[in-house]
Length: 193
Image (cartoon, rainbow, N blue to C red; front, side, top):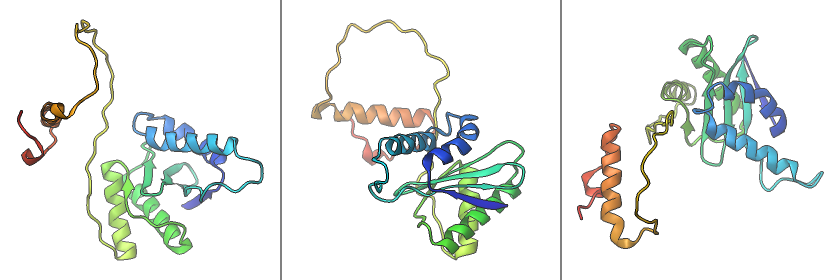
């Protein structure tokens, strides 16, 4: 297993786009970041230095397939793992290889990771084992996909900008949405009208 780091966003996109598009819904964040990098480099003046360093972009693969795709933004290391023929043992080995590379090369700091829950947990456990630094879950997010749009009757109302007086109603909507998807919002954050 080996880590291949990229300095050219176009080369990186050519390598990872097919695997990320296999599940575009889950991978829209790294795809968007990489697309934006490619576009910004396309319009840069030849031989000009970019505004600040390019993000860390790497692939961890074995001889048969890419196991992990890593993109580091200013705040987060975004990790995608292939789901085709990959088990936890292989992902753990790939995470270990990525962490060893990051630590040995001192290429980036890793204040947080964004990944599927299982991948984030495997990475965090390996991070703790290799570096001795503990971890904590800061946010357990979900991704929602719109798979069907229902026709609705148009409302006779009009759109207007939200105002201060709308805060209780907005709070109620957020509270009800979180409750409907099994989330938890503290009641202290919600004010009744």
